[in-house]
Length: 85
Image (cartoon, rainbow, N blue to C red; front, side, top):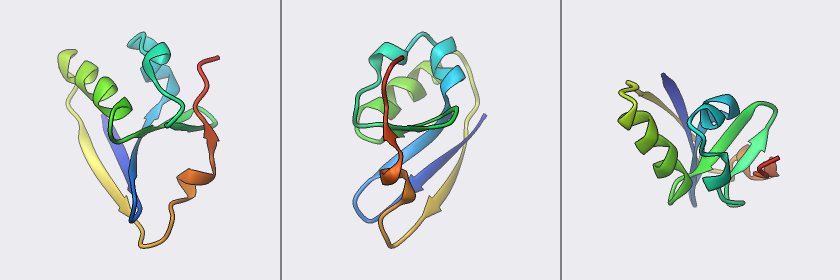
């Protein structure tokens, strides 16, 4: 699975399909510090990303990370906060 990490000078988020998080039965574990847009969730790096990445690892999913870095605030910050609905 390819996961893009969006990095700005203050923080980073891991982009994962909402359906993947739902399949792992982890939607209720994701905090409001993550963001969402369309069918994608942008998991904040400090807690939420570790929850999902650890579950993927436990399910033997091979992950390739692509880094998207900017020296400005990331557009991810303009997305809606994550809501488990």
